[in-house]
Length: 354
Image (cartoon, rainbow, N blue to C red; front, side, top):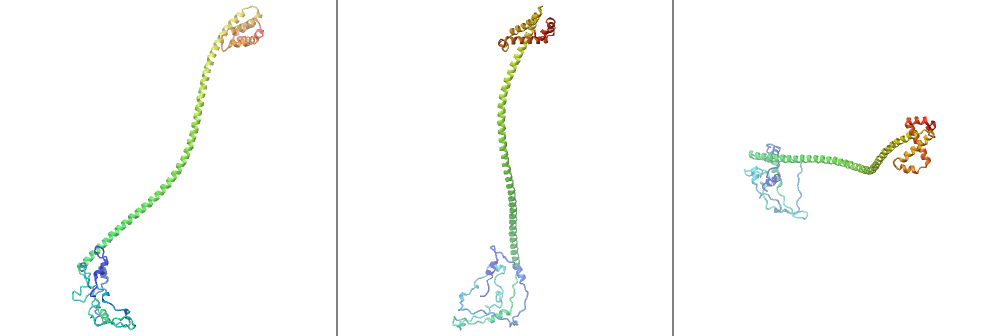
């Protein structure tokens, strides 16, 4: 194995666009240890440190089982960036590690595997490994320095990477802010929905109460309407009764006017008869003539409201008493008649007993 393949190693630190994902300049600054002294002539002696040895393999190691990467060349991108194999070998050096185990160590074709003392598979013959370790520890590999173009290209790649990460972070932050705002708005909507639900429940309860009150009012209104209809019917009948009573009153008034006319005519005729009766000189016959005059006046009057029929049905004595009372009223009505009667017949006729 002449050199390690940097393309296979550094390819895992690149994105799909081929840009570097690691800040190689900062790593180089951290790994910048400066020039170290050359210890190849006088290696330090380390006596108290045990040498780590690996167990002997169980069988012979075949050459085709070992991984080989010597056939893999550097890519154009790694050559441009300076990340490929160490170019010190091209400049006359001995590769990436000046004291590599593979450099300067001859291949012993005569080294055959020695048989295992335990009866197992023959173990390979020991190689000259101590010499390679001493050569590796005798000198320190110098870190390769990059030129300005490589550092500028690396810086631009890192800047692009940071810008892309900033954009991604900004986009993620915007998405988080938008989601936070949406969550806040959703919570506000949920709170508003809860408030509206409570208000809706209160309105439903109020509406149900108002519906019950409206039902009661409708029932009360229906009862009042029925009462009004009954009152209206009663008023209609009352109006009919009032109209009948009005007609009866009109008839009564007509009858009263007729009776007044009859009474006026009776008064006139009665006065004439009384005057005729008073012209007789016989005092004893004055009262009898007066009563007879009244009776004749009654029987000669118009038949108003069955007057004549009523007089015909009355007994004679009752009619005579009625005529006497009428004559007494006439004397009270006409003072001159009273005076004349008192002068002719005395107090007996005045008292109505003559």
